[in-house]
Image: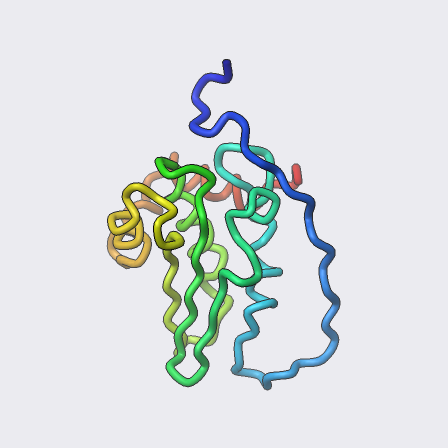
Length: 154
C-alpha cells in the first residue's frame, strides 16, 4: 500500500511529439491554443512523477480561446472525482500562465464539468484573485507549485 496517495495507480499515457511551428499565423496579439498547450503540458502532477499530459489531465482540446472577447478557458480533468490536488493543479496552471498572455485577456481555469465532486467550489477558488493570492502566500503550497512547475524529472 502506498501511503498518502489519493490515486495510487493512475493511467499513464505516452507523451505526444511536439509540433514545430515556425510561423505566427495569428499576428502578435492573437493567442494560439496549441501554443498554450505546449507551454503547460509538461507541468508535473503534484502527486505523481508524470506530466499533466501523461495523465490526460490536460489535452489540446481542453484549451479554448475567444480573441474577440479576450477570453481564454482552460479546463482540466482530475484523475479521480475526489482529487484533493485539483486546486494545486489549477494554481500551477495559473502561475505558469501569469505572464504569458497579453494583458487584455481574461484567463479562466476550471475542472471539466462532472469531473470533480466539488466542481463548483474548486472552480470558484481557482478564479478568485484574492484566494489565489492567499494560497500562493502559503510557503508550503508555493513550494509544491514550484516543484510541479520546475521539475526536470519528466
